[in-house]
Image 1 (cartoon, rainbow, N blue to C red):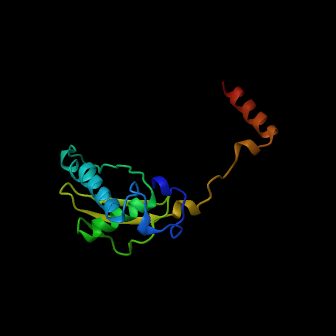
Image 2: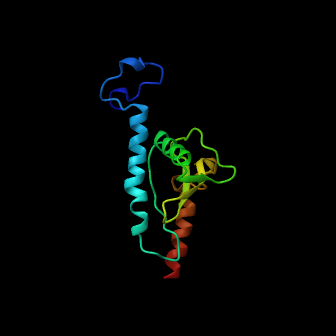
Image 3: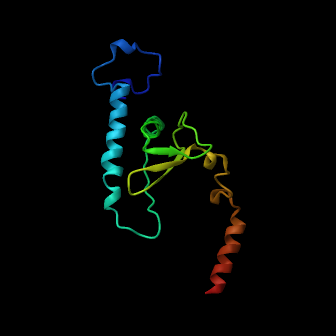
Length: 143
């Protein structure tokens, strides 16, 4: 984003963007270029093994949304049944299963179900000290 960091969409004149601002087509080319160089080119070089490789890629929602949309439109990926490409929230999870030939399946897109689960069952900072003392005594008596 550079000079537009923190500026909301619609709060600037698109016809007068600073030269440092990446256009939509430039952004798309960068995403596809990254995919081709980092994923497609290296897939065939991975040693064959019985279990699938898990590769974690972390980026922001706009990059993931643009990348997956372009990969599906270009037929590099097929979207699994009931998987639709739309907005991609930051911290969401997208899963792509790839084959060695560079083709793949978009299995999950912008899934936020992990955010809907309770994050903390017990907060260690809120445990009464008596409980901690009882636990410590039980541990000491085992030794």
